[in-house]
Amino acid sequence: MSSTDQAVAIEAASAGATVVRDHYGSTLARFSKGAGDFATAADLAAEKAILDILRAARPDDLLVGEESGRTGAGDSGRRWLVDPLCGTLNYAVRSMLVAVNVALQAGTQPVVAAAADPFNDEVFWTDGTAAHIRRGGTDERLVPSADSALVDLNLDPPFPNREVFQAARILTDAGFTARFRPRVLSTTLAVTWVAAGRRAGYVTDGHELRDSVHFAAGIALCEAAGCVVSGIDGRPPHSGLGGLVVAADEPTHHALLKSIENQKPA
Image 1 (cartoon, rainbow, N blue to C red):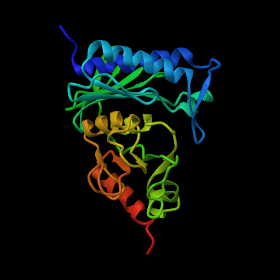
Image 2: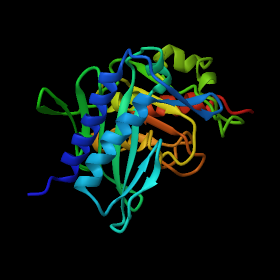
Image 3: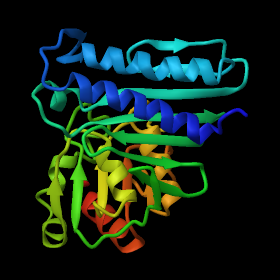
Image 4: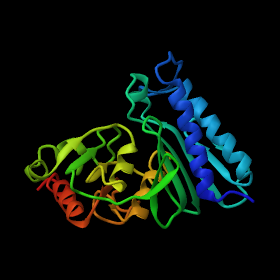
């Protein structure tokens, strides 16, 4: 019997996480990607492990890897988005704040997704209807919560909406600092944590996040978990100004949008 799509996603993300964990702490070759960005040998090895599983299980699907680009026939109308090591800069300096992201899209809609935390042995996954976490072979439903008051801000460039929004400026908004406590992880593991109730929210600028190997899995997980998801202008995700605001609930989402609105010039 063939495996379900979510089982394939979990297996692939887990395989990538094993490679990332096994390479941790070793001296790794770096491969420049320009503008200060780079991949390591761990990125490449993890991506190969993930793609090998996807090719074997779904040979008719298109594969899009951060490091290898587009491969496969793509005859099925489905594509897998693979980020083998989100948080390479963290990983290269021996920080464990990283994620392995795998998402399947049919057209523009997410079908399933899995995001693995290599160092906590956790896999966050969704079948498109609900979101779960797998630990020690046991699955639990993800339940968002704003109780932590922790909000992650992505401060990495580029900033396509810098005229009206820049995440760093939220830190000067009195409403934000009165209600929330900022965090900066530099990995989309933080997006997953909103779905899991470990973060109240997440904010980033950027375009085309729906089709991003970095964000597709996390967004799918948050939507399936019941988080409030929009662009930085409050419009539906992937429209308007773009960017991303993910919140555990409506009051948190409203407060974050208010802090963003307060940045706009009079």
